[in-house]
View 1 (cartoon, one colour):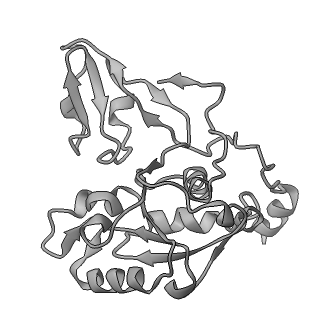
View 2 (cartoon, one colour):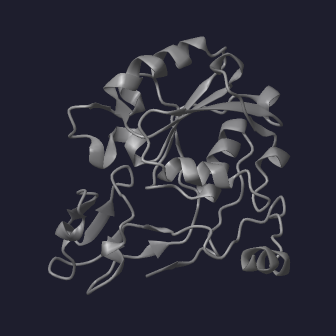
View 3 (tube, helix red, strand yellow):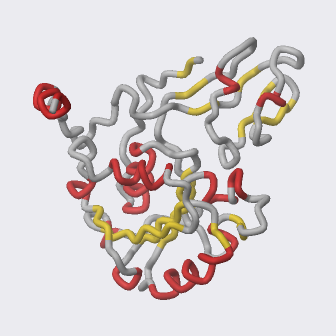
Length: 238
């Protein structure tokens, strides 16, 4: 069992409370970049996440699947190595939830990518429970409903029922591009769209999939205690 002995020789250290710098912890994401016409072709993006606005190339992260095609070649876009990806539409739950929340994870048609990133939060490296975040099997005990994957027609009713069963106050987190708008599966006859097509979404986390640090940052934001960004000294590069 060579993997067993290798594991003993490669210990994993849990990140400190304020320590979010981690090699490979975030793939980063493209950011608006100044690229004159002819210096960069926005058509390189397969999901139309890039839009030209004069000399600047704007980025729609709710469409970006992080294929990195815009990160290579002539005129490659700037790339931010951060993990503050969440976009809020409502205020945090409140002071009573600053130290502890329970989340219900609902797979509405996920390919497995977002779920795998969520599972990483239980590893010793991230140690989700030390931040007071716990997973519950029932929406009746959940403060946050985390939706992953595009909402299929078969899961739309279950998603709505889970939301109705949650006690107030409650929040819904759409995790990943597919949960935001259906992603690359949106054209399918079996997909209704993103989570907002069925329930109100309070916090959106783009990415395909979003890394564990981005998910953890979003959960802490719901609690009103956001983590520091994993940007390395504000690093922006290619």
